[in-house]
Length: 334
Image 1 (tube, rainbow, N blue to C red):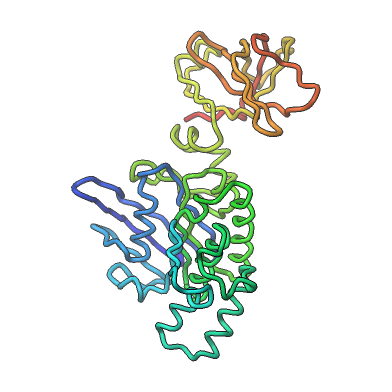
Image 2 (cartoon, rainbow, N blue to C red):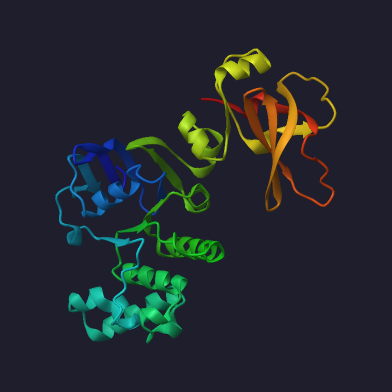
């Protein structure tokens, strides 16, 4: 039996189905991400898990216990929201210790717990500061400390890094994953950012319009998407329609091809078994740090993206005619 089990979860608002018969499980100590675009149902499912929303059908079990109708405060789950919700009139110590003080814990034990958790999130030196004196990243770590101090069975995080700049966001992602491993927590993270999900997760659950499209490890969901939606959302696959693929190769399949597996040259490749071959004109170039993405028109109505390492000797130009090939093992049928 899994640590958390969500079975046949249904939820509607004003007659509109938000969650459509969701089934998934989470193992103890796992870092799981609910991934998807806005409105797909991922945050609603998170709120159902903690008990802030009631479900219309199905069941939720934690450690084998049915918690479907258990009040949120009795589930042993903490949640960090997109907005940090720090009390502006309390300093960091009072914000972090608030839950323990409401539970009337011994003051000495509270001080020890606050000290330990602030050390864990590297915020000891800010203990007397108020929220307005903290940066966005420091406020996020304060919210994390307030969630961790309650020793939750499960920690839920609803897009906690969305308001933070890219460089700091990556640092906080690494820090959170380190804390997760150190404490052996079970963590459920919500994001719309596939790179963030790939970087942090043990398992990704990808949602689309209230449906769970695929559950898999980051590597598996990237390399083996089960549907065209997954292929389009994860990894910037080129989705080549059946009709066009047949015109180009003679095979009528809807193919998904990652940009980085496409080889290209300004001279024709020697034909070998096991490859598909294309050719076309460079109609766009998109620098992406160490990668440059070539946009190549390979059909009257279709363009394909192909990635190459960007270096000082890079020589392709707009209008260049290129020859492309991709190994058949790297083509996913969706």
